[in-house]
Each structure stands twice: as structure tokens, then as C-alpha cells.
Length: 188
Picture 1 (cartoon, rainbow, N blue to C red):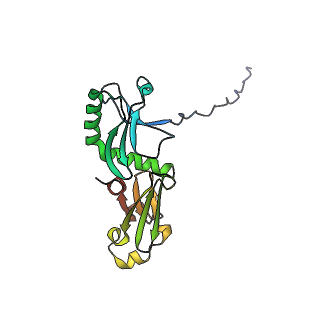
Picture 2 (picture 1 turned 90 degrees about the vertical axis):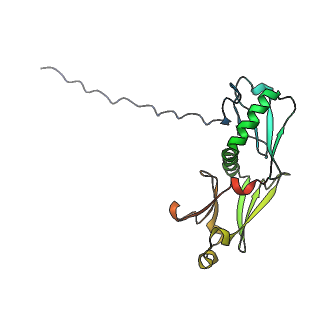
Picture 3 (picture 1 turned 90 degrees about the horizontal axis):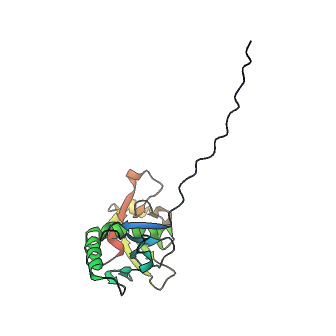
């Protein structure tokens, strides 16, 4: 009679997750082979800089805001061919870039929202010299006065995933009031 040898269960190693990215790539191949974005520890002012391995050492950077105003301010030394391609790409992608930056601001605690009376106050870069504020009347987000009167400070939040100002974050997504941050934070 043959002996049956029981196999011992083999230990399975935990699956290693991907390391967290140290940067965000926002524009790829603008112009070809240049990638633009920002790193995880950044200046508290919206910008794009070269982040690809080949061009990172050049430290090309373009500022996209100045105290809450939209700008396109390149730092010195960027060749005009690169600058023209970048400017055209930013023009076409500005809304998306701003939404990405707003999400990054929420993640890093650079954006705060509160309720003062019937006004929502959004403060950008609260501890920086680049600090600025935007306000939204609660009745502009919630036209129903009865419901608006019930809103408390706990009902005002920032949504990192979608880069929105939210009213009633504890409710189901379909029952929340939302306002995109990119449309309210930066002015022309």
C-alpha cells in the first residue's frame, strides 16, 4: 500500500503594491519626449515643470497662477520651441490641469473650506504668502432657502477625488451639491 504524503500548504507572500509615485505627470510628450508635472513636495503655487528622466535636470518650470490669477510665466532658459508647444498644450488642457492641482492642494492641506453665515469661504495656501480666498453664497449652490438654512459647517467639504466643493458630503453622491474648484479658484 502506498503512503499518501500530504503536502503542506505553501506560504504565500503578500503581493507587493506599487510604490507611491513621487510625482504627477500631467502633460506627456509636449513637445515629444518632454513630460510635465510636479513632485510630491512642491511650491504652493500652481506650475508645471519637467519631470521626465531626460529633461528633469534642466529644471524647466512654468508658473500657472499668481495669487489666484491665471498666468503663463515661464522661468528663464526654456527654448521657444518647447515653450510654444507647452503653451498650446496648456491652453487646451487648462481646466484639467487646474482640477489636478486643486486635488493636489486638498491632498496636501493647502485648501480649506468653511461656512461663515450664508457664505462658503475657500482659502488656498492658508499658511503661505501666496494665500488667497474665494467665496460662494450658499444660496448659489442651494437655491432652496429652507434647505440652505439647515447647512452647517460640517456640511461643507472638499472632495479630493473630483476636485469639488461639496455640500452634504455624508449623503449619497447623487444627493450632494457640487461645484468644480477649477472654475472658482483661478480668475483671468
